Amino acid sequence: MTRRYGTAINCMDGSVQGAVRKFMKRKYGLTHVDKITAKGPVRKLSQKVDREDLRHLYWMLEVTDMLKTSIENHGSRIVAIAAHHQCAGNPTTRKRQIKQLRRARRTVEKIIRSFRLNFEVKIILLWINDHCMPREISSLPTQYFAAIA
Image (cartoon, rainbow, N blue to C red; front, top):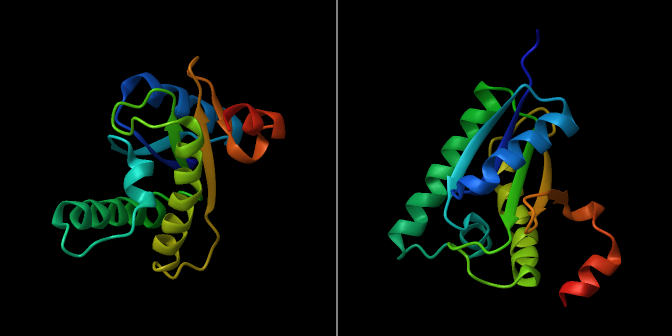
């Protein structure tokens, strides 16, 4: 059996980790999902790095190192960045978290480009609702966004 890896940048909240892993395995035919967790990671990934904020800088370096290991050593070709309903580490609205997800994608794209890979890595954005159901942001209907405005 061929091993197929993906990577999930996800909240440390254990109630959403299994849902993200299961979604990725089912939708993308993965056998393994490497986890990069923190409290409210989309907030951190969407912020500009202030070189004076050593904790944030260190965290970004850790994320970069974990992504590099997952992609280069495990062969991950898909990275999910997830945010979820009632995040204690990022207590803000769904609308704001979705904006943060989009900014986080740009940050992760820059990180991955810095690896100078000779293959593509797909990045998906996931919103986990109050029923722990992940949905890809691009697959959410327009009225879903209108409802959260």
